[in-house]
Length: 251
Image (tube, rainbow, N blue to C red; front, side, top):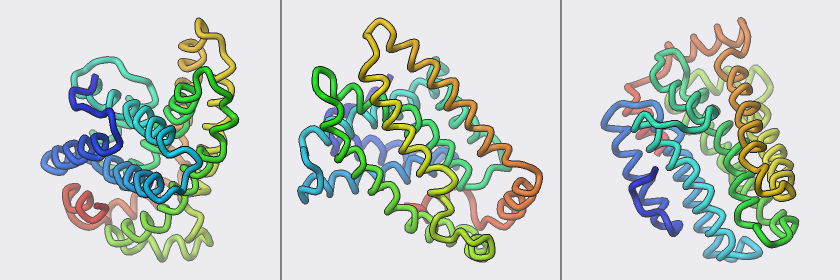
């Protein structure tokens, strides 16, 4: 379990800072997602402060519950303890050379949005009508989508050929959204409402089944087909700098 206090959104941001610094020092690709997730968390904090959400205190609760899913999985994996299959696949990818930065990010997005976000949304809505959360849930997804362009620009600094490839594929602006985020966020809300309506004694079983399905989706990212694999390999060869360099460029 997570040994760092994470009871507020500020503590979550600090915990992520510690993890990023450690992964940067270790030259560990798992740092790519940690950086992206810290950016999302900071944006949520700014949204709470500006009144962007219908219920700021509830949103901070959701954000903390959501973050703890990732942080608990990370520290459990580091200790060799059991974690969800979705996160296990994402963390294990960091031991392989071939995946590009984007694949590492998408593996984290797959586990965290497709599995964790629905669980956190159902938990923060316990004893309440989960539909009251839908507007703010959608606003979180708007924040995620808004970061897509920033991530593309950061990734282009890591591998300049990305812009050329995206331009000629006709998916410059929607590349990440079409590949993962859009489907993930829609599925997350459906899962949240399903989980909210599930009897307590069946919740763990429903989560486990969902985890298996989400983990199975990882193959779309790691094994996207022969042509895509060749393109990704070319991008990987042309990525600039060490893992540490790439983490710093994404920061």
